Image (cartoon, rainbow, N blue to C red; front, side):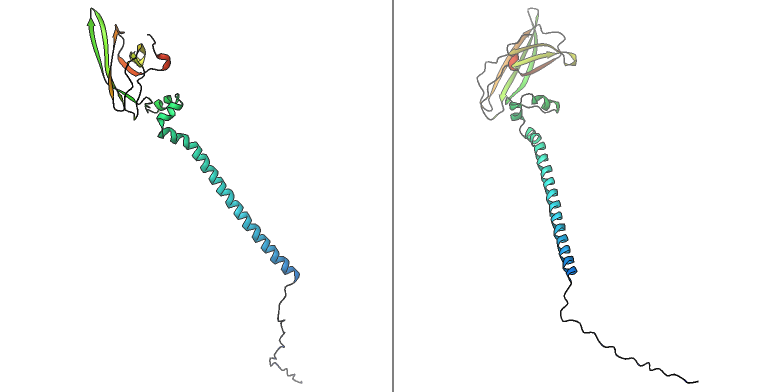
Length: 201
């Protein structure tokens, strides 16, 4: 039987020549433009999102300032606040803060009990000092006697008749009451409100 012989020597394949310039087709141009447009839109969306976030933070900051400003002002300038809105003095009292809008301090108060011709006499003495930085007129004083549970059982007012006090100046006051109620336990002194001036028990 005849034997067939094959030549298995590798032969070089002819090389394909590539063009000197590769030009993309029209589809490639569309894809590039699409990618560029998508990138631009993404950047704009990111900037808008950041603007909205900053705007929200700014609005919250403004709201916080507007909310806290009255509180800060009330804490920093209690006297001015009470002078502008007198009813706020009750709010200060509820938090235990005494606002002295008069710039005057009542101190060294003494009570003296005596019997004169069989009548009990209560004498109250004290001093008023100008603790403000300017001259202050002294308002009428209001005295109240309270029984148990702070129930007021007697009250009266007093015009000290003193001239306005200069800063740091002090004046004295004295007032007497005949036959004060026997149930009276405590004495309260403050400056009288306009509607209380000249009031009788």
